[in-house]
Length: 280
Image (cartoon, rainbow, N blue to C red):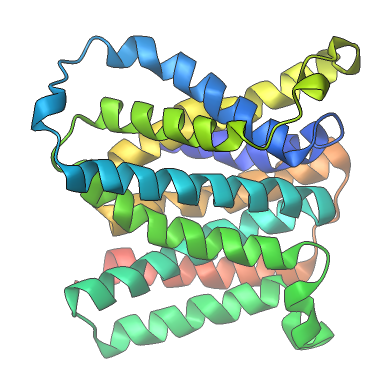
């Protein structure tokens, strides 16, 4: 999980650079198609009985794949328009809060300390987006709306993913999700752009390799972890990503490290710590 989070943190900056070469739809398709062909040979080593997979599981895979597609559209749009480091901090420190809210609603279990931790996490998120200085318009400023969507979608998707693996091998579940998502995105690609090999260079391949690694390795490990460890515990590993994301953005593309991002990120990490290690 720790190595998976390392790829996630670096992927935000690498996605911003990859946006210089291909449009969003092409990037989403290639990311998931490469993820599929990478994990498929590994999944073949696991026994799969299609007749034992329920309709509920297939429906879960479809819903997860649709959410994957929307999330990645927002991911590439947000990193292209906005600051990738800030996006990495905001999304990864607020989506565990969304996961907790979703899990609490579904399980009908809630307490005051959890509520206070959630409020603290949201305050941290608002500070990251600089809402207290720039006003409510900051929520829609420079790609921030896409980061907000990423946080909400991933938080909800974590719950769905953990439920979807109850009756199917995790590797096969991930393989099906990647394949279905790549098929969904196939309808929106510009094949001529993808096949125009003159636009590619070593800079693209290095950065897109990291973006794909975050999918093939990072997300795969996270999906398995959300089932093995539980969605809330798995999401807690995400608090290592903000530091990686903001440092990568600063070192690679010279994005400034704002005090609001540091303070807000720290507050959100504290709220995640309270949720996972203090609340029983």
